[in-house]
Length: 238
Image 1: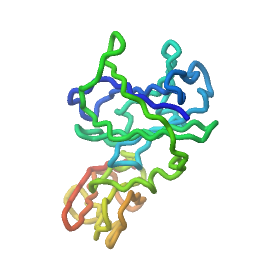
Image 2: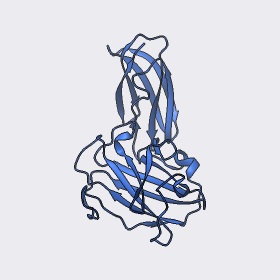
Image 3: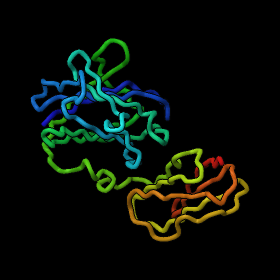
Image 4: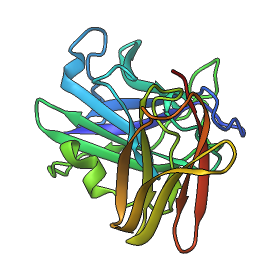
């Protein structure tokens, strides 16, 4: 078991920009820290995502969540500018931390971006510390994040990679089952490909788009449901 406690730089409306996020990690007694001075960092691994877009993950395993030993204090940190889609005011961070030695997990969620209500604990940047979370759960969330989280809103993510040649992935999320149309249009508004047309279950979905037969240029993809129409731009370079 370990305790997860929050430290974060103060936000003030910097939507989409680079901002570092800090989490202080304790063992179960709330006093002892992990040894983050060198790998393997006490066997602690982590995943972070924005609540409405769990398909976009920052992880310690791919290096987008890193380790910091601050005078013996064990801190995980990551840059929220590293998400594929820009964050916006009101988005919230979810973090899952696991001690692989004990198989215990800590789940911290719904920390809203742009909040400014933190205590100053160090000189320099405005940092804050939360009350901490004792890890009791032994549920295996680690390998099934996408399957356990149902989005709260309909979202359409930026395709990845972008620019692309000739394949790219388009992701979207649904809070409930919907009749969905996902279409691609050229810069003149002409339909060039319909990727989805039918009932789609609640959850997070990714569609591969292959533009091998299209010319280089700007294209638009549009997600339509009964209540919502979302569009984004992408660039094909051959």
